[in-house]
Image 1 (cartoon, rainbow, N blue to C red):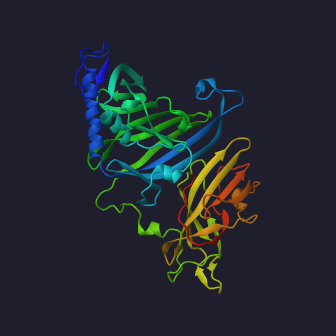
Image 2: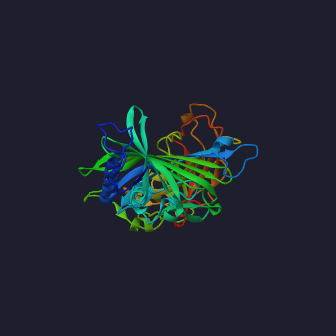
Length: 436
């Protein structure tokens, strides 16, 4: 039976409805009201978003484009992890790397640049399904998960009524979609949302996409709101490549009056990349710079977006040998990529970029390019517990001249130790590049 979104009653109640449970139409109306109440009253808030991404490629043998995954043989080709802050204001999502405390006018796709990502988990999906598309639901009966009884409603929105946008291969299209919601009949809370696109047009390079969003109630400023806790994304491309993402949200909190959050470009962003010497001028380019990690990096938990702490192992000196920045000064770097490759040989790839150096007790923007001479980056043998060191290769990053690519072959430890040293050269500040 079809249930219009705003319907409060059913002509016929399903036999599965117990006497103590609300009729499906009544329950759906309560769920809709609570969802839209959240969408309309969401305060300005921020969460930390961690995305684990895996990409599977087709194995040997012939397969047809868009053939169901159950009929194809695939292998895990690469995996990576991203961590960023996402701020929501007036229904708009804005992103920054973890701890940057400011949000530029850019979206998630502009930051990440490559690989599968999704947006809209906070309010866009809910707004489109529960309001914009005037979705009609059909009652599908009760389900039990982990001992919890839920009610399932299904829906289908055709292309001509849809406001679901899918972007791929440089194209942005509207697609029809279908799916289901699982709701708690006792609280009228939305527990899960499942959304599956119809077949995607060839220009997107993709066949289909599916999203599963698990929601939870979170108390913000003395009021309960519906926020996502976990999102699963699946994309099948026409070339047989499968992308599987798991996103987890944590640390969600509202920005109150005392918050220092700023939206848009700040003066600090505009000057990013230029290191300031003690007299306030930029460090001259071409000066050697040596630094070492002050704590280990564990690839099992680290993510692109994390800040890496280091210290200068030698003073930065000018052409006249005057000390511009003393030995031991704190340095921060940003981990821009942490990716594993599994075939044909296991490789761990890290991309690091310096961000600041402490001068006179104040972190100053730092522009530096990696010194890619042989053996410029070597692990600390003592920190490796005398075990044979992994093969390390440092490369210049073609996407950003101020970033270094570290490739580890035959990694025998899951931890990159504190004391890991790298060599850099001060550089002329350049605008940040998109990682594409």
